[in-house]
Length: 254
Image (cartoon, rainbow, N blue to C red; front, side):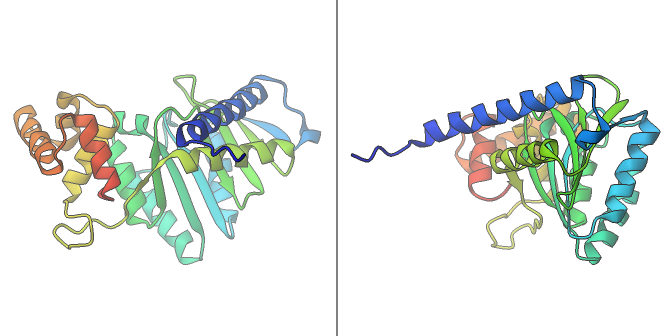
């Protein structure tokens, strides 16, 4: 007799595997790293940013990232980052960027997502990612824990069993994340009849921000924001804000 695995069982199995990989990486970050294991410690914001920029510059095929707070104090402006991504994309680099919903709670969070879309990155959104990660050509990875309030220590991982775990971790979280549409043409009839602002509104709803927080992010009054949310819910036939986000995602609007 063949017993089919239900979607719920698959989801639970996926969550357990994600937790296992996360636990492994937490142990690696908290322990003493050895050079002969292909791991070295990078300390200080300047050192971490320098390594990140070197990895980006040396990438020849693909570059993956898991982006979430905390951020370095001297992080480049969004416009400068877009220019770098566009240049590397013109060289044939494929970008896959996973943003934690926590990005939407920090200043310039929405601008970061817009910048990713403008530069043609493949972007997905997920809540609760425990690490900041950069992976170049599956041969080098930079990983930092998101537990602290400052970005001061990271691990540089070269080909090794540890790198295999980092790559598997990213792939697992990428598969569980929500894709973010790259092109938004209002009323175009392509399945995404929403404006850029409406797309941002859905993103903030999915991230679970309150109405006053959404209003601040969009530069609107709370009253106008509430009206737009209710209008979106009515359009989608949703009874709750969360349901509106889910339905918009299923329709391919987000």
